[in-house]
Length: 346
Image (cartoon, rainbow, N blue to C red; front, side):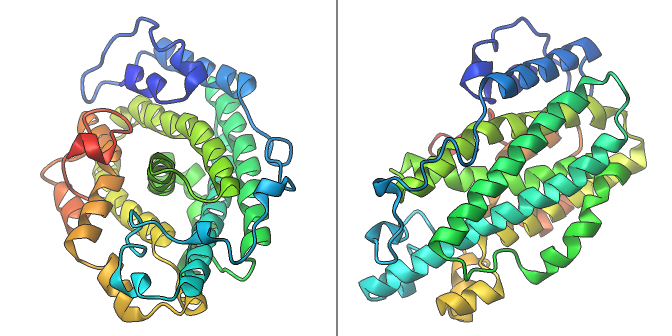
């Protein structure tokens, strides 16, 4: 898993992925020296390759202009809403309007989730021992998240400032969830994956399909590059610490993680009620697009193939916990390797 983690965290770290490492058994933690080396590698990457929200995005360049009638806001068919007959039947101007609202709503929700990560992350760091390299790397990560929040919010301000983003229940829960960083770090890192994996999946699929508007494409490219490190660290942290949890904590983690996956993905992918009203999106269409249909179920399962692989390797998906994955609709085949695309998984 160390090799898979290192290979997934971006071009700079990819150069050191060949460092000899010892493969591990499913529930055995990394030797601390190997884990510490992973943290040093991640920290060095954060110093050598990082982005500034207002320095590395040329917001006022002519090609970055965001007119409301730009046809590049039209949703592609890889988006479940974009492929639905209701959306396809809309006049061109309405397709642009709905697409602009939907894309901005997802960006705004991403910003709100990153703020949740900051709240929980600072709580987590309060309990890290002096001299532990986890502090340095995770502080780098939180610094990067502040720039992601700035990027996402500036995009929202320029493109569609009327959107609400996350649903009301999540906004009310964010202060409480933040405390998990100190009280139950293992679940907090699972929640990180519950938010980062869906965003990363959607952005990579959009870029593979040719992108959208150039401003959003540049923001997504920056986010994908740095989120690879963040996702890699969450995997590495769980690989290091989950095996030493007591049986009750391991059972709870195996049962609660699917709940976090489902709630997190729904909050990010499905527009909130306020944003559905803004878009004029009928409830019947919402049920058809993101309900229990085959396409929605397949999409949801693929979002967390990497997490299933991780939890299988850690021995956290057992006969006592698999029911939760199935009931919550996030079960399925685990990925064969990190960031396996849908075409390779088919």
